[in-house]
Image 1 (cartoon, helix red, strand yellow):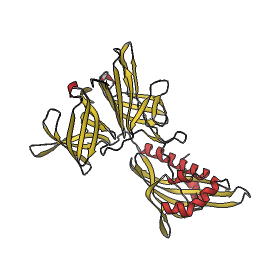
Image 2 (cartoon, helix red, strand yellow):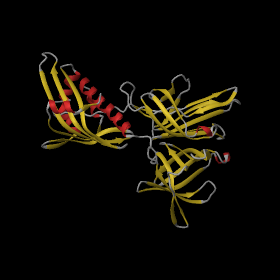
Image 3 (cartoon, rainbow, N blue to C red):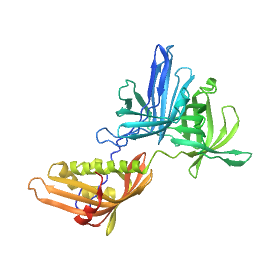
Image 4 (spheres, helix red, strand yellow):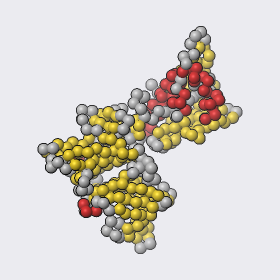
Length: 414
C-alpha cells in the first residue's frame, strides 16, 4: 500500500464450502448417502463463498419417488437428511463434524441411520466449488444453495443444555455421549437425538423456521418418529440470555416445554487452523498491494476498523480515501511497483478473534525510472475478528521503524 506506514490487511474470504454426495439409482434402493463435507478456507482463485447455510438436491428412489436431500452447515458441524419430497416420509440422516485441509475435506461421523457402524469413523475426499454449487471430484451430483445462514437469528449448531421443570432449572452436561443437537441455517432447522458411545440414533425432525418479534416458528417437513407430523407448524417463544437460547411453548404432542440450548463450539478448530487462515489473509493482502486492488484491500477491514499511528488514530475508511487511494491507483495504472512482506513475533487468538504482531517490509519503485520511492521495515500490530466466518481487521497499529537485522530474526509465513 503506501509508504512505511502501510500494513494493509486484506483477506478475501474465499471459499468456505462444503459438499454432500448422495447417490440414488433408479433400479436399486438408495445405495448410499454420504455426507461429504468440506470447509475450504480461502482461495485466491475461486470467488469467495461461505458454505455456512443450507443446500439441497433432488434424486429418485427405486420406485420413482422424488426425494429431497437437504444439508445444513454450521461452524464445524453439519447434517444431511433425505425425505420424500411429496409426502414428507423420512428416509435417512447422517452428520457430525467437518474440517478442510486445502481441497481435501474430512468428515467425522457422529450419527448415521443406515450404517451406525460408521459412527466414530472419518472419511476424506476432494471437492470442486463454484458460487452456488458444490460437487465431489469424480461425482456427477451437485448440491445447490438454499440460503447463506441468513436471515434467521439462530443460525448455528446448538446442544440442549437444560430444561425448566416445576419452575426449577435443571442443567445437563453437553459433553456426554447422549446428545440432542439442533442445527439451523438462515431458513432451515433440524434436531437430532443420538448417542456417540452406543451409536444409537434416537430421532430427528426438520423443516423451515422463522424468528420474528421473539417468536420462533417451525414448519415441519419431516419427523422420523411420526411421518404424519409433516406439515405441522409450531410456535414458541425464544430469547437469548447470556448467549443461551431459551425456548418455550408446546411440543408436537402438545406438552408444555421450556428448554435451554447452548451454542456448540467448533471443536475441530485448532490454533493451526487459525494460523493457516491468517496466512492466507496476509498472502491476499500482499497480492492487493502488488496489483493495486483498492476495493479488494478495503474489503478486508471491519466497517469500524481503526488505524493507529504513533501520534494519532484514523478511521480506516478515511485512511483509504485520503491517504492510500492515490498510491494504490498508481500501482493499478502501472506507474509504480509495490511489494509487501510480513514476518511475525507473536500470533495468538481463538476461532473468533486474533492478535498478531511483527514487522512488515514495504517497497515501492517508479516503473518508468526505476527509482526507489519507498523501502521501509515497520513494527506493526493487528487485531482481527471473524465476522460471518471471515477474518477482518479491526485495528492496525503501525508502531515504529524496524531494522533489517530485526527483520532477519523473525519467521516468515512461507
